[in-house]
Image (tube, rainbow, N blue to C red; front, top):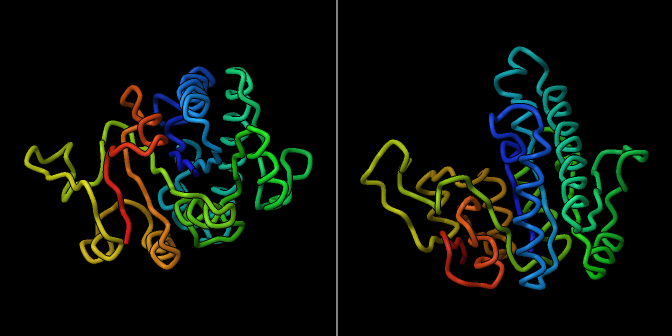
Length: 230
């Protein structure tokens, strides 16, 4: 499976990197991986370090996106160290050439790590500007032939018809079709990522990783959160 994490998970204040918060997250992921026996890859965003739309306002879009891609490498390295501290071996593979920091992105090598029980953290986004880490997550999931993309949320237990934190009457969906997500304009993930998943019939599970045991339940195939499929 491929787990998509927001960069904010690595910092309780939503800015910078907290190794304590990273270890807490790594502990939950490592325990779920061990208990489920699943092979697990990850993609982490960089919102805790760089928000191109806001901080890069007035900057060339390509340069702003490149800074964001570098941010994902920083987060991936921190998460790898957090996994190591929790007894889970992990490798970082980057779509950008940073040979002294991470392995190059090579499918066969990634599959070898997964088969050996290591976690693989894909960094550097797609390696190109104009694409989100959501799209990178779906792309990497397809490359390693993952069974599903797990979209981790914080205190939001699925996809709603409107923001449940602002609207008490918001309705949660147990299941959605890809086209419903696109037609309703539901802010689950980048539309490009949803379209790519739809073309490949790759299931997406949106769930609240902050709920104790939720990740393990998802990895065991139990009905948790919202399933987006065909």
